[in-house]
Length: 423
Image 1 (cartoon, rainbow, N blue to C red):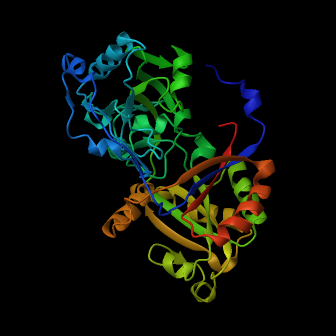
Image 2: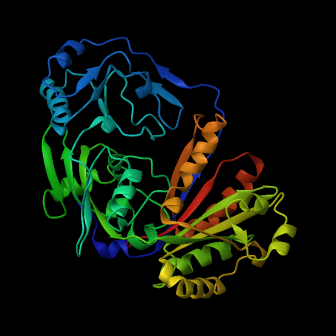
Image 3: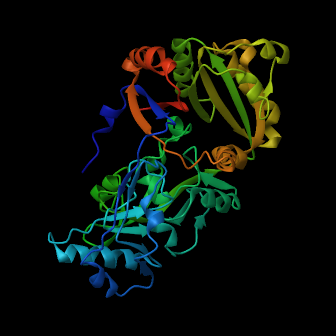
C-alpha cells in the first residue's frame, strides 16, 4: 500500500467535522462468552505475561458504550514477544481457528473495535517495554511504547523543554491507539495529524513477526499501519517527532452568527505563515447564558457588551485559537495576537481571552472529563461521527445539517477542524 503522489494531495483545504452526539439509546448490544476449544492451546504458550480467562468484562466495553462483545481471554503482555507469540500461534493454526485479536489501549473506540467477540483482547497498557526515551538535538524525538499514554509523553518530554508537534484534544489515550486512527486536533493544519509526525514504528504483523518500519524501511507496512485501524498490525513502539515546548498559551474564543464568515476566517488563519499555533471551532445550538459560562475560564474583552449578548435560540459558531509563547516574548505575542484578531470578522462583544500553562491547555478535556465523571455523565452511550468535508461542499453541508437537522434535536459538541490537505 503506497501513498498517492504528493501533487494530488496539495489541491484544497478540507474541514474535518467531528460530531459527538450524546444520546440515550434503547439497548446495548451484548454478546455472551460461551467458552472456546482454543482455551487449552493458549494456556500452553510460553509468555512472560499472562492470560486472564475470567475477569474479561472490562474488555467488553469501550468509550462508545453501545456494544459489549465478551472476549474469551485478555492477554496482559509484559513484552512485545508475548504479543508476537499469541498472533503467530493463531496464524499457525490457520483458517480453522475462529480466534480474533484486538489491541486495546485506553478503550476509546466507538463501535467495539477494541473488543474481540470470543477472541483475545491484548491489554496494551500492560506492555512493559523500555521507559520513554527522549533524544534532544537538532532533530529531537521520543521512543515510546505503543501502550504509553500521550499525557505521560508530554510530562516526560517537557523535562527536556520539548513536546510532540501534533496532538489530539484528549491526551489520556495510547500512542498505538491514536496512530492507528490519525490523531487530529487544532495543530493539524500546521504539522499534519499525529501520523504525519512519526519517524519509525515497531509492529507485530498478522503473522506474528516483529518488524521495524519507516519511510525508508518496510515503507508499505509503515504507511499501512499508520491510520490503518489495526488491520495491518499492532503498533508496539513508535518514534515521535518533538519540537521546543512553550511555557504559556494565549487561549482565545470568539463567536460568529454567519457560517460563511466563520469558515472564511478559519481558512484565512490556516493559510498564513505567522498565525496561531492552534485553530479549531465548534457549533453551538440554542444555548442560553453561553458567554456567562465562559467566564470561569476566560475573561471578556468587553465585559459590559458581553453581559448583554443573547445566545438563546440561535445557531452560533465559535472560533477557538491559541498562540504559544514564552514569558520573555509576551509583548511581541500580544501585538501579534491583536494583529491576527484585527483581520477577523467575529461578533466584537464575544471576544474572550485566557492565559494558561501549556500543559493545562493541552490537558483541558481531561478537566471536563473529571467534572462529567463526578456527575456520572461520562460512562454513557457516545454515538460519534467523523467526516472529512471538502471545502467546495462545506456550505452545502452546513445548510443541510446545521440549518435543519440539528436545530430540531438535542445534541452534543460538534467540532470543526480546518486542515490543509497537503499536511
